[in-house]
Amino acid sequence: MGETIEFPVNGTSARGYLALPPSGSGPGVMVVQEWWGLSPQLKGVTDRFAAEGFVALAPDLYHGELATHDEMDKASELMNKTVPSGQAATDMMGAIDHLLGLDATTGFDVGVVGFCMGGLLAMKIAALAGSKVGAAAPFYGAPIGDDTIDWSNLSAVVRGHFAELDDFFPPDACQALFDELKVMGHDVEITVHPGTHHAFVNEENAIGPYYDEAAATKALGATFDLFRSTLG
Image 1 (cartoon, rainbow, N blue to C red):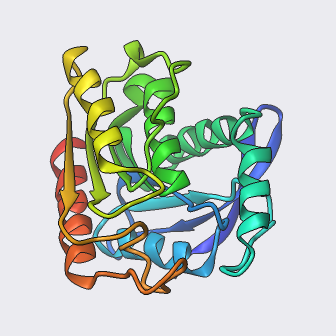
Image 2: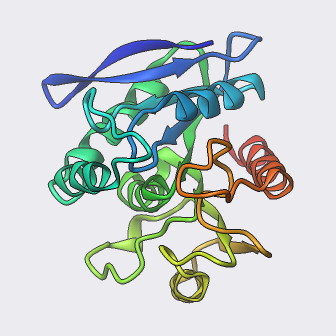
């Protein structure tokens, strides 16, 4: 089990959920929330990364606010208030710097994994943070159609996991973005999991009966392997 912490951000502070591995130290991983907020389910995912040997930190991008699964309008409002303003990026940069400054964190870069909105943000912050992010794993979320991102600073290995039947982030559009990044010379790959829907890793079935245990286990396992092989 982890704990709620505060970390500095641009002269002020933000909160997050920090979980340490059984060994007490390991590579750093930032876990980025879905549009619901820093939910108990997301904290559980953070604990799972810690159990796999990572120092895992999930920043609270909504600063204490949370939307339940029957409050999609509220979730949308919170997302639209946080992401376009740049506050989410600022908080994530603070979380990355905090991770890298912890005695428990080994290595000189971190991994970033995010889900839905968090997948989109994982790719954005990897482009913004440059060499501070060694690997990124966006799950069913990507900044498709966003031509404002400067990808020239992206040095992370990116391995995305997307759902074949996703209406929020259609796999063809996500594949097109990854193809563009590959043409630019970036080390990116996309896996589209057959028969899956959006949020197939969320065991609480937040938007419908879409949890797919087999696909979730496969995708998360690949992400653990990615971070073990690239970080440090």
